[in-house]
Length: 185
Image (tube, rainbow, N blue to C red; front, side, top):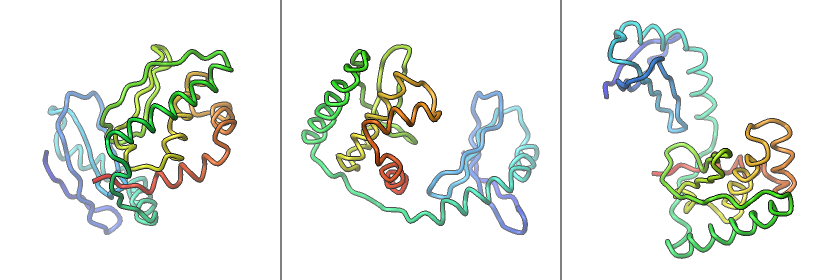
């Protein structure tokens, strides 16, 4: 990993450059205000710098947005045993409700995820939840499980999808807002 620096509208922007086997230059701005770029080894650093500068408005808007969000640094809320019990209890509760919609219970997997609370492979009927949910309230865990189950009905984030989510979690917008404030160290 290499640290690079460019100037955008008179503001110094420091970014981390990682060389990977990728086709495109990828740019990510994280809630911790870090700017990360990944690019193929064959792309020159001067070209990457120009690319980053060309995305200046996007970068500055994202950094401003993230810096205006009040963040909450949290500690795990449960023991490992309690966490497992809460996950299973809520997973089974949501599975029962989706069974009424004729949705078969998917496979549950747990793993450490860097930037998501969960994911759903609707083709293989597998829901993967982040082990970082141990930092979340039970209400937030329930929402994430409902969110992922809803992808079994609607695989995108359209109005129809959020309509399914809101049936079981009417206050999902507030819960989602709170989830976005959590920083995991």
